[in-house]
Length: 215
Image (tube, rainbow, N blue to C red; front, side, top):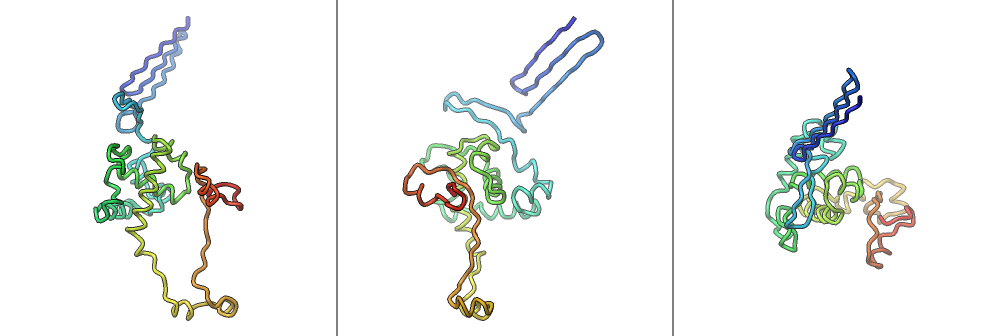
């Protein structure tokens, strides 16, 4: 005699399967709490929301994973950098504000937005990949990243130190001094794939013949 029973609790996402075959019983349980991953449906807004698959708390105490995902060697440095981003000196770029439309609240916690942006910069992950990991739309993911990049540029540009012309001339290798005396800086670029823009002008500007894709 074979009896199969399925039980599912929507609140905790618990699934139980019991198979009775004489003396053999197999039971499988999968539980996800509200703190880790659940799904909710906001009918008034007509949208479905899910908690991210990966959040900062999942890796904050593991220095190896934190360095892999964000480039920060430890929790202390990550949180110090995050705290530095939390002032309101530039209201139009403030990452604590709502979106420019004024009506939509943020989808992710501020720390998870920062975590996601560092993952983008560190690993070069595509927007579609990040939107899947953090359970948000690709449009929202792109908007969050763009806003943070602008904000980081304004906040951290003082860390980029440009030497003076006299310092460059004094330290320029002879081969450059002889052949390229006006050299100021040598830039090595890394191309990251982007979405295909709808604008024909942007489409032309972003297309890379080297990568045969928009970057």
